Image (cartoon, rainbow, N blue to C red; front, side):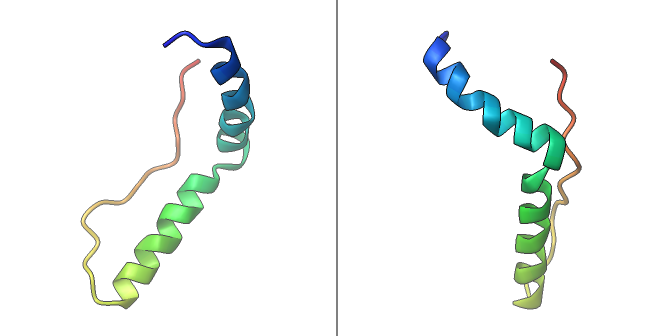
Length: 52
């Protein structure tokens, strides 16, 4: 899909992810909560690598 409006809305989200990587912390926090409940970690997420 080639939508200029969608792309403009997506820019701040990508900028935040590239500079601050909030998804990495959210995933790690969720993994910690699941481990505390007795679930075993099956996969760990690495930090984002984005090629632009």
